[in-house]
Image (tube, rainbow over all chains, first blue to last red; front, side, top):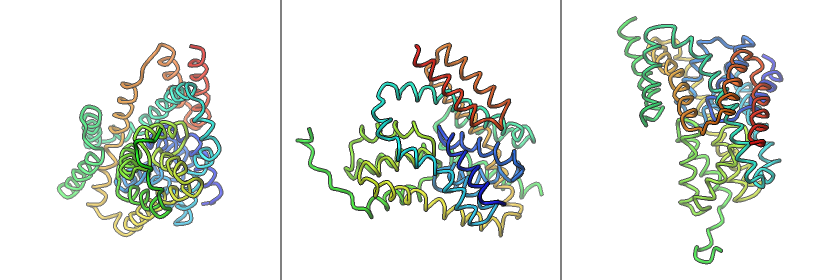
Length: 173
Length: 184
């Protein structure tokens, strides 16, 4: 793994990283899987771990993917590369954007269009995993119902499903 | 205008770093879980008023990047300039970096045990459900117009169909959507 191409990919991901973790996870997935750097199952594992470790999910995912691909140097490079553009743009444009006033509302509305599209893409790329087995389908549907219609914290949903997976692995070897 | 409220104590560099470090180290569940915690901390320490904090949070959403990080950076800079910015950056970045590496190292050792595989498989299985729920909430809470519906559907279809072009297509759709917002 070439550290420079790792840095470039994560820098690019950072530029479009609007709207929170799941947008970024979707872009990381398409960029990394598209290059054949990591397998589908390997990536799902990394995202599951990112969810249950402290810190922003997108950062955790970047650190883990970097680590898998190139060890600790890879982890450092991916983490710094994914935050490089956000850091620079905040340094350069905070006072400018703060002065935009009403126009900033329009910008944020327009960003919602792109963000919803990217979350839809993330969902699309994860759907085959949900359809891959009965257990996955039921867990995904249950998670959707709990997260969409109740105030259950996502962490409990993830840990609960992990617990179910653990028990099943002991019962059905 | 600050006649009635006593002057807030100026935060020390160590205080800024440790505040963000602590929040980043103990808050699991991503940015939207972390931001309210940051808000509570900075208002409890009387570094800023709640309204000012949520204005900065709104501003942070105009930038790309993890929302918790952006909010921390903007808050840090507001409080202590460049030094505050760098301290907030270090405070947010270090704990997840270290904890994620520790977990990754553990998995190198124990990742192939059946119960660990079972746990990870179960935890990964909920991802489509959680993403679906996020999409559901985002679409439910947005104020829709015919233009926004058309724009969003086209953008979603485009990024799904041409996934390797997701980043340029994202910016193209934001520009088109922005043009529509400006005209109306």
